[in-house]
Each structure stands twice: as structure tokens, then as C-alpha cells.
Length: 341
Figure 1 (cartoon, helix red, strand yellow):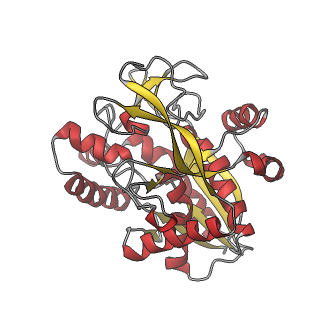
Figure 2 (cartoon, one colour; figure 1 turned 60 degrees about the horizontal axis):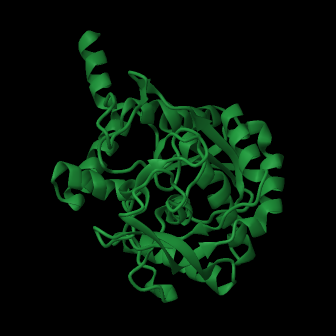
């Protein structure tokens, strides 16, 4: 028996803060140590989310080069994991073979008709002449009405496509219909529900509530490509000037780093995903859909056997945020403890 343990790749736009560390990274480390005490084989993998839009957004805010910010942040993150003795087997780095692996994965899914190119609604910024997603567009969540960026609401966990955000300037933004790579999650609704029901003893209450809400209605398609200018290009499926959505890229990315460290990945392995609650939609619905699609395309990777979520730490009533500089750095806490002791 072998357990493959994954924690979300932190966005390399700064060091790890206390909220990061006290959540999935420490939780996964404790889980690994418990399994090892019982003589069970484990592989714990963490990488960095290099193509995430928040890297570029933070670089713009700090007036620094995005590549320099990424490299500096990766070094700090690796050091912080070391300072706290987080026992990762693989601190993954995106190399040329990583990009090739991700492209081959989506090429296979496209070949087996598990994903397709469809016309969808996308947001266009008339001023910047760009297609803003995630960090580059802010409005109000159409579900809980809290302030949120595009993609996901960190408060309630519900997804948004950007075009459905409330309160955005309609004079600045227009909705266009364009072709994008799309994952039809609704076509897998029953398989998703069945698998989540099978493992629901591992779900915490907030995740269970979110899943009940999401699965009570039809699931919107997940847009797998966008025009953001950075990331893994989608030209291999004839989508020029587009890149693979980083949240879709992340799933085969996990498998790449597991395979690089462990070699052959068996369908009998137990795949356990630790994560912050805010990203539950991406892991439980998008990644599970991609895992099911991978099975239909000839991959024998294991389906996830558990999703272990954590709620956020707050600082002065607001959640920790690297992008907003609202946080306590993990390494600063370690330094203070050493000085006190």
C-alpha cells in the first residue's frame, strides 16, 4: 500500500505565511508521519504555482520582474519548509519535461473527446484590451455577494466565470463569445456524485455543505484555456494565443511530480489531497472530472481517496493574503520563537 499525498502548490508571489503553514502543508506533513509510523509507504509532493495570475499581479504591484519574483519566492518557500521540518519528498520545479507532460495529457483528453473546443462567454477589458481572469478582475460573488476576484470566491467557495461577477463596470468590460478549450463537468455529474459519496466520511462540514450546493444543480462547463499571455501555450490543440488554465494544469502537474519521484503510479495507490477550503471547487469537481476523463483516455492514475480541507486564519477580522500583504510570515514566527526561547 502506498499513499500519494499532495498539498496545493503555493503561489510564488511571496514566502509562506502562517495561514499556509498551519493549513495543508503542516496537515499533510503530520499525516505522512503518522503513516510512516505504521510502516506505510508515503510520497508527499509540493511544487509551486508558477503560471498563476497572482504572480504577475503582485509583480506589477511591487514594480519588479515577474521572473525574479518567482525565483525569489521559490527559494523562500523552500527555506520555510525546511525551517519547519516539513518532510516533502519532492519540491517540484517546472521544467521543459513538465510542460511537455501537461501538453500530452490534454492532447490525449482532446483526442479521446473528453474535452472539446466550444464557443463560450468571456470577459473583455476595453481599456487594457485584454481578457481579464482571476487576479485581474474583481467584483461581487453572485452566490454570497462578498468581494471576490475571478474564478473562485474565497468566502463561500463557489466558482464564477468572471462574466457573472456582480458590480463590475459594464462600460469598461464587455462579454464576448469566443472559442476556448472546455471540460464538460455536467456530463460526469453522476460519476462525480458517486465517487464523492463513496469518500464522504473524509469531508469536513464546510466542504460537505459546498458540495451539496454545487451538486444540487447542473454543473457549468469549466473553461480550460484563456488569453492571459503567460503559462503553457495551447497551440498544440490549435488554440493560438491561448494558455492552459492553471487550475486545469495543476492536476496533471501533481501526477507529473509523483511520477518523477516515485516512478510508476499505480491505480491502487491512495491519493490524498490536502487543500484550503477556498479552492475546494477546483480540487473536488474540476480535478475529479479530469481524473475521470483521464481514466476514459487510457490513464490508470488513482482517483482521489480523500480531500482534507482547512478553514482560513484571520488577522484583524480579514483572511491572510500574500497579494494584499495582510499576514504573518511563517519564517518571522519561527525567528521570534527562537529568540524568545
